[in-house]
Length: 255
Image 1 (cartoon, rainbow, N blue to C red):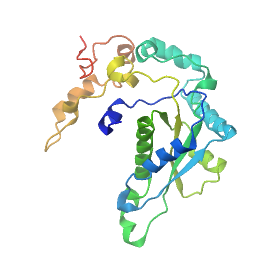
Image 2: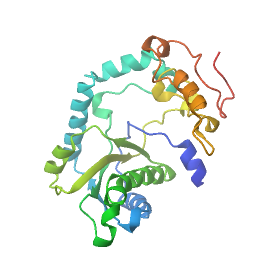
Image 3: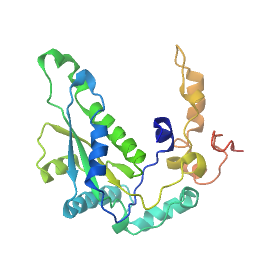
């Protein structure tokens, strides 16, 4: 797949087929990912590959606990909200039981060594050898998976200290995320096609809204804040499509 097309068409996936991920495919994805650069070539990232079902279930149950703290106490609660906002219909999402949610056959815990620093790079420690490198690897891994026809999800629904205890991870390692990998059961529509009024499926900001030349354009930025769906009153974004921007995929604008 063309690199630019890969980036443009990527969508995270949370429901996977009950199908194992071959080792050669997994290794290809990890091999591509390891080429991700790091500041000062510090190379502080490690991958903990989780295939054991019991371990994967512990991670899923931890996610369930975190979602419950956000008042999503069941899949029914989640789908109720998605139906109210039009997300279910417009994104092509399907109702599945909890057993099928975040059920990837492989989970990769992406770690970075926060204590990896040499004398010559001491001053760059906080910028080159911690979370930024690992998060760049997460992004590369998900794009590589998409290029191979797989689905992926960046799971942050966990307690990093519990993850460390669970898998004997050293204290000096930072847990950047857990990447779920597998064959998607279905792939949601791109936000530009879904045109949902739910901010989670809002179209990408137009490039002209994001670029500031030579000096920060405060007036332009302020205008964006007025129409940012995450800042609108809840009654507004549950309701109408008037804030939907035109997109290059649809050419449609809100009224």
